[in-house]
Length: 223
Length: 223
DNA sequence: ACCTGAACACCGTTCAAGT
DNA sequence: ACCTGAACACCGTTCAAGT
Image (tube, rainbow over the protein chains, first blue to last red):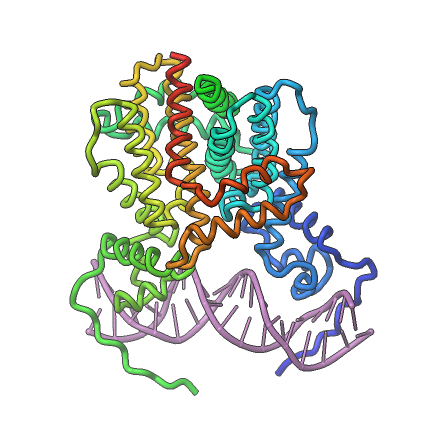
């Protein structure tokens, strides 16, 4: 026997792709990637789960749009320093901080090559590489090295952020990591053992920037 | 009414974690990440879908074990050149080629920070960074820069490989990418427009190596 | 045109029942 | 102890039926 429930009353404010993306970002930030389902979004927006398909083709498109929005803010917002090296550092840190605030962005950036978010970042970094005076033949490789380093570290950082409970602090997390490295066989993993010692005063953001500076130094040295 | 089917006869050869991992790698390589389900694996191994849980806690553990196995081959196999720079290039290319052969590894490496596969790679690169004569205080940052660059580009490359049909060649794919860059607004994306021109003779592997050399040059310059 | 929500075709995971 | 496979609690996506 099927009990017929009365239909929910229809909302008055219209849906739109932008409203969907905003709601998706809120869910992703507040409850993580696992919590973003079309059913959850439908409840939040007081609509049916099928309604979203009028505005996005599927979940992937929704996630891509959300990622584009976050990266567009990074790339367009904030001061653009005159010095190209400073501008590159600023862009890189902008992405790092965005992923710190929205760890799911780190996941998305590695899901599809040459998605719009990455093109936006590549463009801005490329222009600064040109301003640095890098010869034309080396510009693509230089920009690629910077972008891919950013994506790599941002991805790892995001993966860490996803593991952490919202309020667990990073210091405790580093302690756990160091303890694991100590447990590795000393003979097979001498380097990790040595690095475990200093890990308590490790700063992800500073290390991220150190890598950028290393690549910038490499770019300068071959100029 | 429920029709009772006779039970399937029991297999004679025992299951094991290793057999599960081997079968998982075969499915992932041949049919992609979407095809790896416990049901598919059960059929392939002529067992019930619940049997696997005697050997792995869940799907995540299975994927991690598969990734560890592939990276262990890279890190332990192959000649280890005496020259540290050459050894680092060799390790990096090993990861690149492994991801070319097993694109799903690229996905897995970005899913959890400090997973064993990454520790294995970090250790080998770290030892070579020490052999390079990098001062102790800079060793962690230098190895981190190299590893994260590898993960970043490998991740992008893997994402591309996943998009491509098995037999579609990369040249055609690059043509599609170039066409998309041409369509971008010339005023907003001057760099991408310029890069689109040379994209037809682009070599992912060569660009990957160019980035490694850039970071190595940066490391040398600050020594 | 836009929305609703049941229905469909999947998943990962659990667990009672078999051997 | 190990295995089997139905059952459970989910998903993304579709689509007939409503307004």
